[in-house]
Length: 264
Image (cartoon, rainbow, N blue to C red; front, side, top):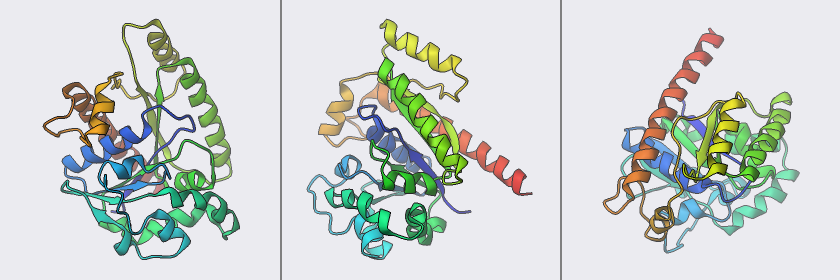
């Protein structure tokens, strides 16, 4: 079966998107899913978790902009079942260059297609913007996860992003199933976190039951290049992201079953 392509997307920055992308990819790999993490963000935060020395020879720009074969770009990580398609600052050029390409929305899907059968899942870490590469990534996705922080601006940002996504869906650019909204940086003791949670729950949007807590340990893990399951990872974050991964697996399998029924 072809890989499930999961886009982690939100045009608002600071919502824990890259940390979530890395943690989900790691969790899926630890569950035995052959996983490819594709860093679509020129900030390259996901890449830096596995390549701290910044010795990337080829990146996503080379794949799309220069037609470099995937087997020269994809690299193994230190974790079993997890590979990485890295990013560098050069990936920022794709937003402009994709505009000139024929069927630009389909460029990422077309270039990833040769490895669809090699993986169970492909996790796309998207930039916090609404540029051409983000649109191409959403077009390539079969599933969509929208992380947001527990703030009023975060709640507003979810509504704005999903409204924009619906315009892509109406144009048949976006066909991915919305697996859910993930609430991050949640503080149970603060009124704003509780209000944002209640508002999201009342919105009718699919919500993940797992709430990712606000922890300074996340910054420490990034600084130490520690991922969930490592001996020095934060126990609470590891547990929460493990629970989130289980939810994602369940929702992916449900979505796949519905797609198969629909095709039948």
